Image (cartoon, rainbow, N blue to C red; front, side):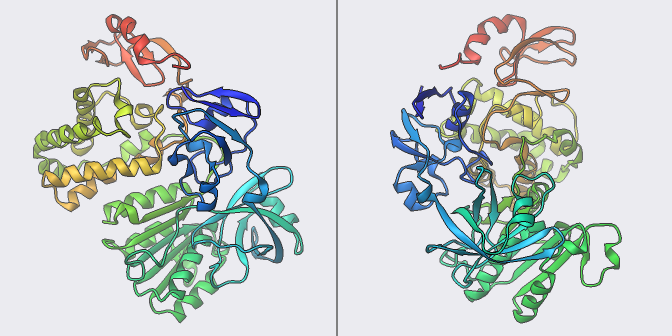
Length: 529
């Protein structure tokens, strides 16, 4: 069991626990925001010990080499002594040179750094206030071409920082900024980047990074098409409408569509009446060979990512930067499951289940030998994993209702899964599908179903099982009355309605009375094990 020593106190880490969660559980004072390695607010300095290469994902090489790491994605295999970062190594002072209101609630800030500052198109910075409050804002300028660092800030009622930036900060003020951060970038040096068509979809101030990416690509002589869709509820939310229309007139390879979703938008000239994603779907049905960039409201970003997968976009070419909100997400398993239409054509391609089982058998053989994925199944036999997944997918493909297991959120509630790990798993199963002769269309339709539940599965810290709308502590163990007949996760015998089972809230496993006693100790490791 690794320990983090921080400000003179040791914090033991539980099995599978990231360093930030261990620090917070022990009462350490550590700043944080996104908790998934994106904003880098929680960055610490490893004075001694190795927090692991994965803890440095997305950081500048200068910081990586100096021992900085992100505790929210750190799972160290050895003890680490950590310290607060040196502010001078992370932050840059920037002077507010211009400020204008481009909409009633959106300010455009032009900042002049005191020192040399570089960033890739699509990256963001963290702006800090003197009281320690910090928020992330995407860079709207192209650093190689524009003199100022440009930020677009929407005033969020009750927000921790945006009202101050929009209403109180004035020209001449100095802001403390750290960054750049983020991997949702366009890089002209990447192989094929100048020829690959770009689809950019954003809502609200999610336009900022897309504005930078589009202009950077055009400045670099991009030879593929660039299609940008910007969505807002009201016409006033299209705050760069004129600039984007002008850019489209100046560059034949660039197209822009402003989209307004509010009722009555159809009466507005020059805009699409509806959501930005709906407009993109109407204009682009096949996206093989494209790169897709998504920014803005999380619901739009996740819906668009799923559509991009089903439209043939390589997962490596889908870059997303959703807004981060305080507090955990509320899973929507029921709504999403109800929205799935049976796909009998895919079911027939899977030989009414025979090929589905063969694919899952081969896939889980790989999973159980994979050092990154196998730990998630160390209490579950391969046959049990195959059976559960087969039953779940067969229900979705056929419209039957034979699956009685946990829904996606509860089945994965204790698992710490990153977007990168989710995509890694998807690449593996797609390879197995193709080995079994599934067409690309069928591969896309199948994996689009997985994509539907990404938001319920990806997380930076364990969550509790949710029952009747109430989230329970992950380590809780209770005896529950069985209301719907199901199978024991130990011996796999039937547990009839009215019987009593022991529920392990961390893993979601349910055991019958004969298995409960022998499974309780092995299924949930004691604290510190």
